[in-house]
Image (cartoon, rainbow, N blue to C red; front, side, top):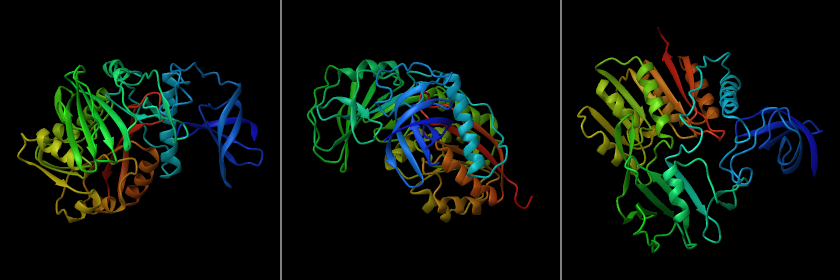
Length: 411
């Protein structure tokens, strides 16, 4: 059924909110507040609905023409119909709203959002899926199909020059193809498969390394098993399968922010949870008396050991934070947490409240789970000092943030 509705609010997730005639909320992607639109319901629940944008009857004053021909078909971008300045404003407002509504924080101490060094061609890593014909593409808006693409304006230029040259046969079990550009201008291609049989490839004429990731582990098909990424002139080995921030310049901006904001003093004990390959630890270790890091991914742990080999006072625990933390007997002055989108698992959060670091820096990629965890930490005796958004993902609804909290209990 087609409805004609007014849209009022941009919500987290890249959708605009309106109301159906019966009062239910309806969420519409690729639309903007202030627009009158025609929508077709694609999800009809008792309390809400989701709609497909059929026609914009009255566009918002801020609507612009998207750059990419695949916009609204591909599910990778959400905000190409907004100017970059409007994107930044929207992300700040959404983050503030999540903290107010979910965490119950009145007038959260927001700092100005740190914009990306470039709103286009910023990704050092891009992940493709294959359509039934073996063409590279991205997941469609429905999350079920793959849209074969001819262009993408988010990867760094060398990646955009390379990926159209890649040609794959549709192979059973081949789920994702990731390309990661490193600081040497080389590209690491990672083939992720659910089956152990590696494909036959011919890449002799391409400047790439190729790693096949299967349930049996990594297999190097060509070149090296890792990429080397550089943040603030420091190199990091990042293996196929290890996480690293996709916006290199903004990773540096977050590191700089932490170094300038944290009350660092020589000799402190610093805790780095969900440390990955050691991005934050590498810059904090020179100031620490003792640095304790926790990471669950085996490949990231191997990279961490390599990247911080120069430091004798750094300890790494491999395991889930919710399992490792409760067993630690330490009094950290500073803790940094950088969890996945799901946020802090409850055992990890409870253990943090037991350890009670004086200062807690929470690096978040999801405003909703950040707000949920902030609510728990505030009730546990912490005070919110500042919230700084970082735009690591222009043209999308995703927003990174760094939240600084201090322990005020019993002070």
